[in-house]
View: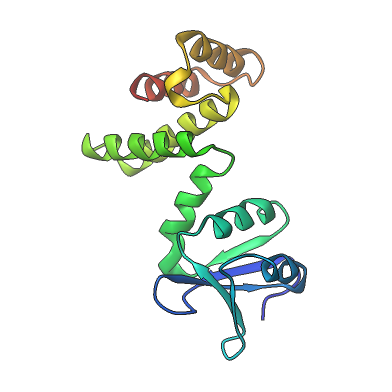
Amino acid sequence: MVSRGQIWLGPGGGAGRIGIKASPAFEAQLRGMPGVKRHDAERLWSLPRESEQLLEFLRKVRTNANIMVHPAFREWKRGLDETIGLTRPQIEAIDRFRTHLKMKVYSPKTIKEYLNHAKRFLEQTNKAPATYTTEDIRAYINTLITTKQASRSYVNQSICSLKIL
């Protein structure tokens, strides 16, 4: 059983679904969501793995919950973490960026860091990817240098990432 403030994600509820075991505080939120099924025998809730309701639920509770993930779902959860706080066009841009970096055979660590830089930039600009300008990039880099006092290597890595994005 999960304790207070915890959510467990793993297999359950049938093919194409993700099982959720949640503490009572979160069960109330699950109860009213469309597409949710309660499985009393397994003592869990389930939703389609790719449902918007599941993503919205996890985005809402992520700051208040300790989310534990079954090893089979770690890659899925990593993708979710990369997209929290982004709009649909921004998420699509991040996905295209990831694909581009993999096709160029960047190392997994470089891909992870470049995606994080791109995500932070998109969150700060809060614009659709097709509409940001060089001024947005300059403002972001200036923020890194002045406000966040980022190191030179961090700033350079961010610039390299944004050149490709």
